[in-house]
Length: 126
Image 1 (cartoon, rainbow, N blue to C red):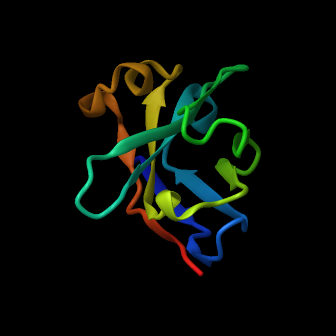
Image 2: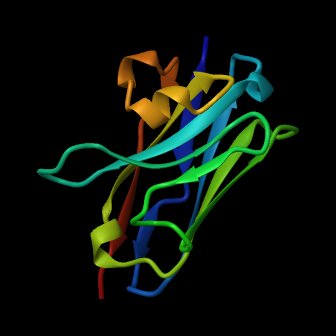
């Protein structure tokens, strides 16, 4: 059974950093692209970043040059390093898995993701 578990969220001051982790189990991790989404209260879910099985890295304009996505296939884990966090980054962050490439992420085809995590809260506030 495909399972994703996020961790690393918390409270941070503006300008601070956090690193989120998405730990996977129950599937061939190296054959799946992993995406990060976020949802703030009262707002729609927003695509944040995606890492493919090769060299593909994709970022939303709002996080470009501040967030970095990476993966460690030996640990079945994807990381999202978030720097220079701002109050607008406050949201619940979710990771999701899709087979091979960031296709569903690119097209916002939410139903095509094979698994979702339960989310981790990120709060940016002074």
